Image 1 (cartoon, rainbow, N blue to C red):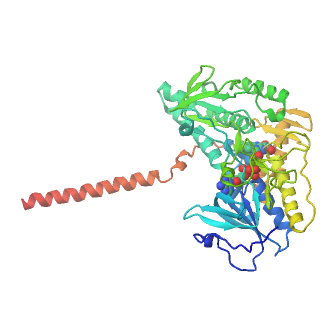
Image 2 (image 1 turned 120 degrees about the horizontal axis):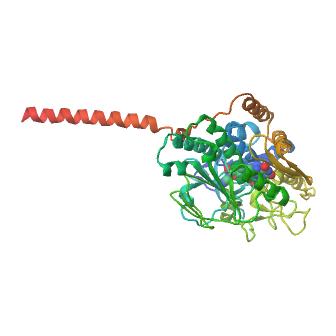
Image 3 (image 1 turned 30 degrees about the horizontal axis):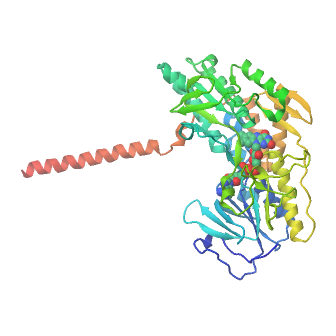
Length: 475
Ligand SMILES: Cc1cc2nc3c(=O)[nH]c(=O)nc-3n(C[C@H](O)[C@H](O)[C@H](O)COP(=O)(O)OP(=O)(O)OC[C@H]3O[C@@H](n4cnc5c(N)ncnc54)[C@H](O)[C@@H]3O)c2cc1C
C-alpha cells in the first residue's frame, strides 16, 4: 500500500489536493456506511494498530440501516429508530463524514465529497473500499417517478405505514367511491423478499386496523402484487415461492404473475394484462442495480455496471482498491461461473474477509478468498406467518416466522439494538397494535405555516385598512 501522507478532512473544503507533510497514518476510505461499510470499518478498528492506518467512512446518512427489519418497521412491530445503527456511536475509532462521494479518481487517489451543505471538496486517500450498495432498478414507466415510492430505507418504511393508515382514515370518512377506491387499493410491484415482505406485513397491519373502522371492512381492501416473472420470492426456492403465492391469495391478496406495470400517471395504474386500477399507494420493489456512483470512478465495471472484484475482494487489476456487497461482482466460489447474490448474508461475511485482507496486504501477508455457501432465506409474511428454506429444509407458517425473528434478532448489530427490538416485540405482543397515522409528520411545518400566513394576511389587511382610512380623512 502506498502512503501519500494525505490530510484531506471536511475542514479542507475547497482546498483541493490538500497534501500537507504530517505524521498522519495512511487513510483507508470506506465509501458507504451500510452493511459492508460499517462491518468493514468495525473490523478494521479491531485489527489495526493505532498508528497503522486511519479509517474514514463517508455516507449521506449518519446511520447504517438493518434493511431486513424494514417490513416490520412498516408494520409497526419494531420502532423505525431501532432498525438503524448510529455510525458515530458504533465506530468510535473511525472518522465519519456525513455526505456523498460524487467522484473517485483512483489514479490520483482523490475522492470528491459533497457534504449535506456547502461546497464539494477533495478527500485524498491511500486505500479505497467501495461499499456503496445498490439503488432501485427502475424502468421508464409513465408516472413512476412522480407517483411511486421505493422500499429501501427507513424513511420509506415510516412513510408507507403512515400512508396506508392515512388512506384508511380517508376512506372511512369519504363518500365518493373514487376516493375510496384510490385509498383502499395498494399496489406493490416486484415479488422479491423486499416486495413480498413489505406487501404481506402491510396488508396484515391494514386488515388489523379495519377492526377499529365502521365503513371499511377487510373485504374492501385491495392489495395487488405485480410480478413480471412466473414466481415470487425466488430466495426461498420454487416450492416455497408457490406456497407463498397460495397463502397470500387465501388472504385475498391479488398476486398477478407474468404481469408488468405499464403506467401509473396520477395513480391511474395500468397493467400489462389490461387491468386498470386507481391507487394512491404504488410501491416499487422490482429489484436493485449497482449504485450509479461507480460510473463516476475510473474503476473497472462489468456489463451490468458492477465493480469487478477478485475472489479476495480486491478490485480486478487495481492496487489499493477493494469492494464488496450489492455494488460488486464477486465470483461465487461455491457455484463456479456465477457471482455472489446481492444479500445481507454475503455483505456481512464479505466485510470481514475484506477488512482482514486489507490488514494482511498492509503487513505483507497473503490475502484469502471469500467463499460462503448461501444458508438459505427466511421471510416474514405478517404477524405469526412466515416462510423459509434453510440448509435445504423447508419451513412454513409460525415456525418460519419465529425463525425469522430469532435469526434477525441475533444478527442486528449492537446489544442495545437487540434489547430494543425484543422490547418492541414484547410490547406489540402484550398490547394492541398501534394504528395511528402520523402522515402529517411528513410536512411538520404545515400547521405552523398556515397560522403564520393567516396572521400575516390579517396584519397586512389591518395596515392597508389604516392606510385607506388615512387617505380618506386627508381627502
Ligand atoms: C426491505 C429489504 C429487506 C431485505 N431483507 C434481506 C434479508 O432478509 N436477507 C438478506 O440477506 N438481505 C436482505 N436485503 C438485502 C440487503 O439489505 C442488502 O443486500 C445489503 O444491505 C447490501 O449491503 P451493502 O453494504 O452492499 O449496501 P447497503 O447496506 O445498502 O449500504 C450502502 C450504503 O452506501 C451509502 N451511500 C449511497 N450513496 C452514497 C454515496 N454517494 N457516497 C457514500 N455513501 C453512499 C448508503 O447510504 C448506504 O448506507 C433486504 C433489502 C431490503 C431493501
